Image (cartoon, rainbow, N blue to C red; front, side, top):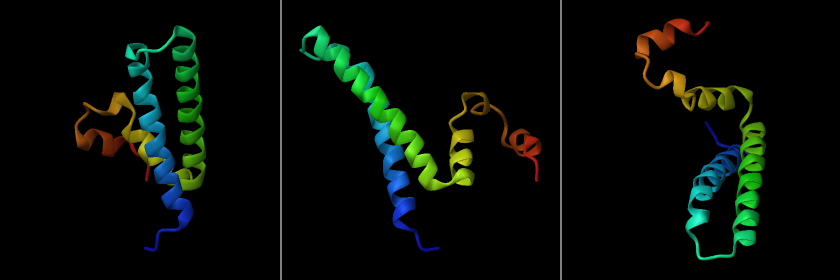
Length: 89
């Protein structure tokens, strides 16, 4: 299947989203003024949210909900057979 530029951009935006959110806990340990830390944390949060939703829109509803289900912590420790049985066909 040929991947379109929208699909590739959607994947890149989801990767940017993860990087932005994982960078937020690092900000307090940087040698910056408190006001700069607050601003940087806010900017990273907004970038993460925007990248997540725009990437999800570009990838489409089916793929977006598939990866969203993988990221749900409630399903991480369930056996594979249990998670397959709960999915409607």
